Length: 241
Image 1 (cartoon, rainbow, N blue to C red):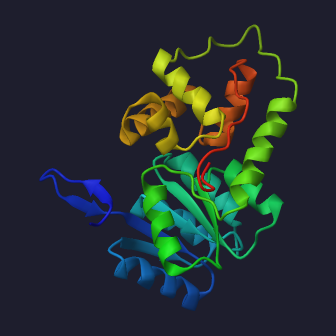
Image 2 (cartoon, rainbow, N blue to C red):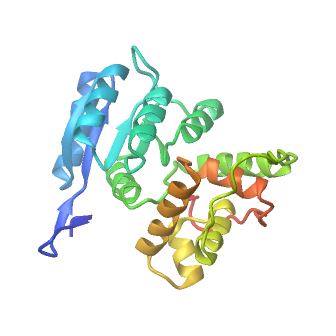
C-alpha cells in the first residue's frame, strides 16, 4: 500500500516530493524512481534560488535535496525552506559523507541524510519515513549526529536571561516526548516507550517546536540541555536516530 496522507475519503494520498539536484540526469532519475514507487513528484530544481522559490510554491511534504548547488548552498536552501514552512521535511541526498556536511545539514533543519550510493529501494523507504517524521540516516551517520548531541550535552548550559520572556509552558506529555527526542530515540521508539501512536508523537513534537519557535531536533536537544532535562544518550534500533 502506498504510504501517504489520509484524505477525506479515508484513502491514502501519495507523499508529495520535490527533487533538487544540479545534475539534470541524476535529478530526472531520482524523480522517475520515486514516481514509479507511487510517490508524487510535484516540483524539481537545479540551483539554490530556484529551489527556494519552487519549494515555497509547491509546498512538498518531503524535499530531497543535494548539498552542492549553484547560487545558494543546499544547507542554506534547507534553512530557508524549513524556516518558511516547518511542515516541509528535508532529506539530504548527497555524495558527501563528510562529518561537517552532515552536521551542517542537520543544524540547518534536515530530517535525514542519505548518501547517493544508496539503492533505489533504500531511497524510496527513506522518503516515506521522512514524510512521517522519522529521522533517516545512512548507517554510520546517525552515530555521528548522536555524538554531536553528546558533545552539546557536555558543554556548560548557557545562562538564561533573567529579564527575558517566560519560557513557553509545555504539557507533561510534551516534556516527556522532548526528553526522549533529546536522548536520540526515533519517533517509533518513543511511541513504543510511551504506548502511544506514531502520529501522536509527531503531533507532540510539532506542538513543542511551535511553542518554542524551534525548527529541528538539534535545536530541541539544545533547549532540553539548557533547561536541565535528563538527556543522557540512548542508542537503539538499526541506525535511526
